[in-house]
Image 1 (cartoon, one colour):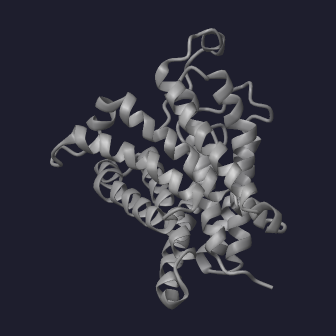
Image 2 (cartoon, rainbow, N blue to C red; image 1 turned 180 degrees about the vertical axis):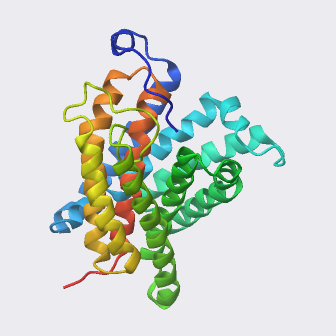
Length: 304
């Protein structure tokens, strides 16, 4: 959902913030506040121990950016409608409808009201994005690494809520929940391994979800964070793929993405605060990917 990091920091610093960006940050902040209140008022934070406290933020990290992206369906409707395949009718309707769902579903995830239903529908929605848009676009140009990166990102965005739906499935559906969690594990493991490979190949590019822009010079540590993420992704991805130490692997992968978010994408979002494509969308994409990985961690079995 991000573009190229080409704007001058000096120009952006004094540029007025457009209403499209303000609405995105407003939705992001509202879901963040509601989610934090829910975690503390329900006593979840007090009950959690160790890394389980981090896992609590999985739904929140996934939901807050999603709500912000939902606002873009209303503020940038024609742009969103233009990426819908031509053979699907009613482009504007689907842009508005999906935008409304992207605002409603995060409320469900962070408040736990009908969370299983919302998670299941989100998993299906992002899987359809992969099948109907991202995969066909990449197949047309299989040498385009960015096309494959985006398709696998949407696959991970499907895997996160699928894992949450599995973790919320009642006991008499235990076998079905195990199948869903296994599918979700592959939906996360495969992107992690591919992203690891790409980050080793392109260490000077932004880490986390390895897209085309270079890491800005003002980011402390510069491209060392890309290689660090690549190492963690490789180890965690292998364990998730073979089904060993899956909870620990997902937690460490989530920590790596969160670290990258704080040291790379928060500074970018501050400098490019007047831009969606060059600023907020990068921060939101990466945080949502972190949330998806942590949702998987919450669905993985505990090990002694």
